[in-house]
Length: 354
Image 1 (cartoon, rainbow, N blue to C red):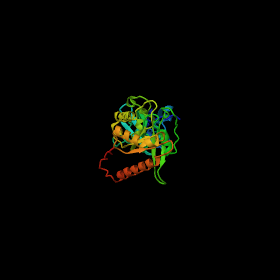
Image 2: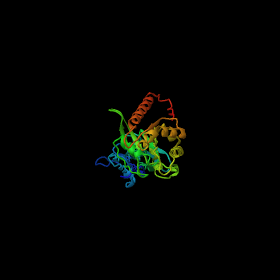
Image 3: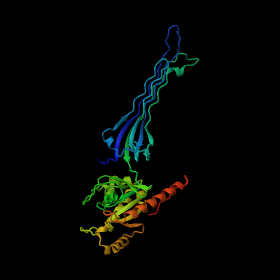
Image 4: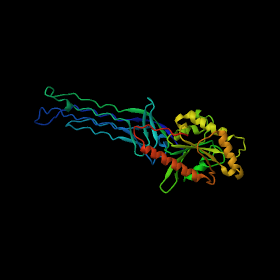
């Protein structure tokens, strides 16, 4: 199924019911007085995060969500029935923005999180509220207020601990297959991955993390070239980025150092905060390099690239070097979570160095 990560919808809350201007009319009670009831409240529209939903594809077909109006009040102090609220179920990680004002409405980053999108109108008051010693037969009543209407933009940012960066054919899909139960498509041509893939990686009996594989980036991605730019937003929530580089000898004369720098530059152009996330270098396709040449090839690449951060050398196709990388990632995530738990609420979160 095609991955759908954004949609536009309209939400219309219900109008409040009008209050009633009524008087008690019973035999032998000629001056019964006012007895008009209040109108019911209109239904509101809420968004609720549901972990059982993975995409926004349903909103391609249903774009308008409307709550019912509240019932009008009646005589004998009968209050109108309030309309039921409408709950829109969305994937965990959905960010909702008001299209007209640009105001962020909600960031539903956990299962069960709920956000009010459109408030229902209040019911009007019946004339029973306006009686007094000097106004014994009030005919005043108020009408129900209209419900809110909004045009909304919904964007899904997947919740992953680790994000994969790299050129097309860098081996990202192969890597995620090697370390998790996810089975993304793998082929020997570029742009195999057309939508994000998530995999749960188990680093122990009670330890695991989620890894996200997005379509490969190319130079110019931040301006819209290729496919990866459409999904860079999914890396916004990650705690660490793995930059996969194909280190095998190239038959078409491609320069892996130049490609690696281009990817990082696209990341910086797209989002400075994404660029500043912890990033590890992972040199892939070790199996295609002769054993005697591997050490020198890695050293030459790191030296020319000018990289000073963590470096891992793997072969995703046969799993070589993958487990040490998985355990290192888990240790880094555990340390980051521990630091967050011990951080004072008023203490600003410090940026991790690359």
